[in-house]
Length: 127
Picture 1: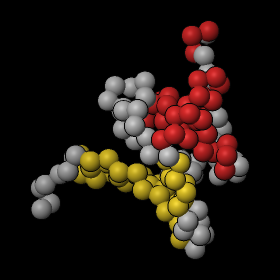
Picture 2: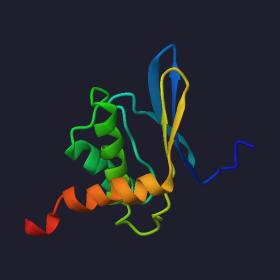
Picture 3: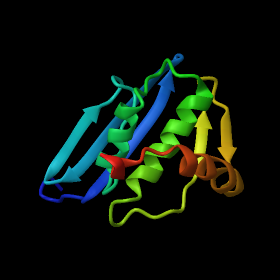
Picture 4: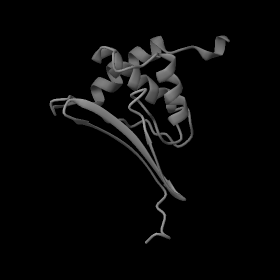
């Protein structure tokens, strides 16, 4: 068993007594586990670097109002789509500290969040 390696990337978030936690696990040649409680966000996969760039660019933190945080998280995902291998399909769930799940459906994402992002996204071609 110790010789077997799984090529996997996981991003895990959760709550314990009202405190939020987030960590990533990258399993290639042995597991690498990193905590991301500070800064409070992370992204994995081929679009992960672009997504993390946008979250830092927007100064993302746990102090952001929920509406702003959801928009910035979706913006980071859309920015990450520029990388090869990142699909457009998105499932968006908000989990509250009291255990409630709020689902934003495809219509809300495409008709509202993506439409706003197309108007507000950074224009990196003007540099």
